[in-house]
Image (tube, rainbow, N blue to C red):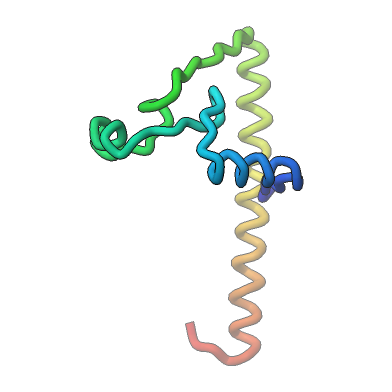
Length: 100
């Protein structure tokens, strides 16, 4: 559901060291001068500084259809959960005599 990325201590330290030491690390960080940033129109879009290689995921029509079906089922579940939560909120507000 609500996926969160939690960094390990090592990952946090890598970020800290990279920034503090101004390290260029291909695909992770890049060090640019103010003039170089100005040349890109002050863009911080990664595509302005890194070569972005799109990865193509080959799948059959059947695999694609199955993935879409699973996604649709997941989405419908979320809609139902949302509807139930909304009803519970309204009931709770009505219970405290809050006029909607």
